[in-house]
Length: 398
Ligand SMILES: Cc1cc2nc3c(=O)[nH]c(=O)nc-3n(C[C@H](O)[C@H](O)[C@H](O)COP(=O)(O)OP(=O)(O)OC[C@H]3O[C@@H](n4cnc5c(N)ncnc54)[C@H](O)[C@@H]3O)c2cc1C
View: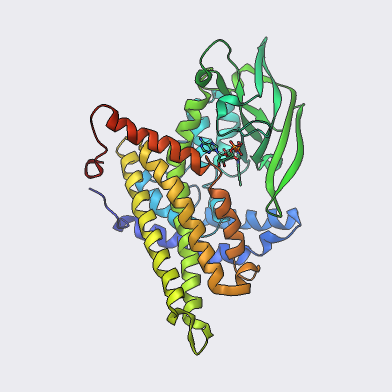
């Protein structure tokens, strides 16, 4: 049965994380807008140390790799409050969860030893290189980066972009075509490439909607790495990527709900305090409609996400449900922040509120981890399959 309330035993921890985000992280958000990377890094290190001191670090990582070992559903609820600030994922050590699980499950013992502990401890950062500028990467069977096994080394050539965090990462996990003469979906593998390897060339930091946020274009010129840098078996790159993305999307969606809650709070406070034409904004019907639509969308998105999370927790891949929340959640986030900006008028697009930054990120959410249209297509195809054999997609039984 779908249980929507925060379990009692997790409330104190969730409250502690929320307090940390509100009291420690929010005040640093302005500093993180500074151009000086040294100031930014120092501020972030301070937050990370504080999170560790308070016992809030890497709560969702498995215990055996140095994390807090929170069960999946408990962590889902904690993630909702982590999401209130985009800085909090790094400050609380949750940013590396998907990458560390990939290494834990699929890396050779040598690479596990080299990266896993430092990764979970926040001493090194990961990055992931899949998307390429020259092909529609929504259809990743088209990716052109190739890796060839020459003796005991992989030799990699190609070009990627939107490798987020590449310049500060210790390594990039690169999706490459390694196989020929087999179906495309079995032709790609993931290979770990330390970013200081010869031939790993950062071409540029790609500005996104007017900001440099660390999404890099990277050229691979005869990059050579040991054979043991392959993750899992050859040709399993897409399967491993799927393992990474499924539960990861639940965490994304819960964090989006945290962002939406923050925007909603700001919108309601503004609606109650600002006066126009003799009454508060909240007394105007059009603004009431903003509040109503936002409340309905947040609640719907929350129910969808918790439902998907519970299915995953019960061992179901929940592909349909994850498709629904990725698309619906990203739109919800975009809509709620958009309305909150509108209620703030000109102030909403300044850096005096966090809304303009949140808005840009919400726009990205409809593209990263798979564009809306791809999820719509796959989800609809999966639903239609139920009807193919004379069956139906019975919501009551999901
Ligand atoms: C902020 C941000 C961070 C990112 N970080 C990373 C990262 O760290 N590593 C990484 O590898 N990538 C990253 N990405 C890239 C992201 O994963 C890709 O942009 C995404 O997968 C889409 O690929 P594409 O850009 O090549 O778009 P394309 O595949 O060219 O698609 C363009 C558009 O075509 C349409 N389209 C595509 N397929 C269909 C379809 N089946 N039906 C109808 N319409 C369709 C959609 O409207 C889509 O938006 C990031 C992107 C952003 C914005």
